[in-house]
Amino acid sequence: MKQKQNLHLQKLKSGRSEAYGLRIDDFFNDLEKHLDLPPYGKNLIYQHFFQAFEYYQDHQVSLGEICERIAPEHLGSFYSDNQRKSYSLDNAAIVYPLGMKFGQMPMFRLSVELKERVEPILLQLALDFTIKRFPTFSAIIKNGFFWHYLETTNHVLQIEEEKDIPCKPISILLRSYRSLRVLYYKKRISIEFFHSITDGSGGMVFLKTLLGEYFRLQGKLFSYCCDVKDPDEEPLEGELVNEFRNAQGKGDLSKFVDKKSLQLDGKLSKIGVTRILHLIMDSDELKTVSRSYNGTVTAYLCAILLLAAKKSILKNNGIFNIQVPVNMRKFNHSVTLRNYSMYFNACANLSDISDKKQLVEQIAVQIKEKGDETHMNQMMKITGKVIDSLAYIPLFIKVPVMQVVYGYLSNSIIGCTLSNLGIIELPEQLQDEIDSFQFVLMPGIPNRVTSSMVTYGKKAVFTLIKNCHETVFEEEVYRLLSEDGLSIQMEGSVEYES
Image (tube, helix red, strand yellow):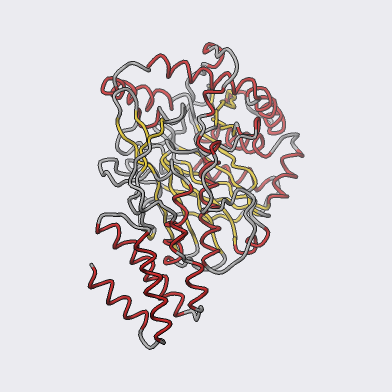
């Protein structure tokens, strides 16, 4: 390894002055002090810095500017501290590894489309610098006697060029695995998360912070705000809190038991997802149309999904449930980066649906009543009671039971999900660098479809993730939106399973 490093150093110094070469030597001697990794990991970090140096030299960046942008101090003590820290999973996260089978791993993806092509060398170094700010994101999930838990690791996380089906399960058999992966493709940066470490709101903070570091390495100046964190700062204590422990209320389970939902017709995919479709709309137009029906954007889209479900289910005399996540942070301004979302089902009997406006108003009332702070706190309380009841059952007994209960049975009360992350804000200096954001939430079995929404600037991206080949549902969604005068730009993947 030393020989390769020396060759790289000679290449960086080739044709330069003696003073230039001495400063490079000093830089990499400083880097060595920040690394206490096995040879393979240390070599990876060195490669990242060598590549960054070459990139900057090719782009005529001065040596002083290079040394400032990628100073080893940005690594902190992350790659030199081999002490392991343990974190218990939050109450929402506990269930995910319990119910997981290979191929049924609860994953979601957050993506950002840039105006320019991604520079992989800078993205990798941005990840090296950013990961230390998020200790629970850099952890691996391990088996305890009663519960799974998180244990930090400083294994080097490598970015990957996107070549595979989105949100494929992450192998938990490898000790160096993380619960996330960072991908790039042309102008897109994507992060795929195992739901055990965070929810969509927490994941978005990580993506925005990574994005900020990427642009800093490009030499762009901006203010740390809008949930773009300074990676060199220590994590806030509140970011690591399991807020479920602070839930208020009685937690009466009988009030929250939902009936099984109808499911869309169609044969389930063998690989978990057949296609992803993004319906891109003007955010102001979407808001105006929603208000014309006396509803919010979420209520309007839920109604569209219900109407499309009625068209897509032959025997549609029954309840169709749309699971709607609620970001609990809005109630108490929590800054936790752990899971802190609860859910309720917006529903209707499909055979009773006839009028769109009446349906939007009906769903708006359900959202207001079911999604308020009191009801959601009670749901959190119920979650805590269930976990407490399982506390002293050994993990090897819990797992096979939960793989049955969590998988098919729990998802059977959901016909579809609509998760709306809301409006994404960024520091003013970075806003013109971004085209749009995307949010992909994988469906569970036996669900045939799930949906998600995220808005940036004027672009509202409404995403449908299909788990079957039949196209009636998405065709009806498109028709229903179009008949309300919404201009829709449709983008999407090829069929992953043919």
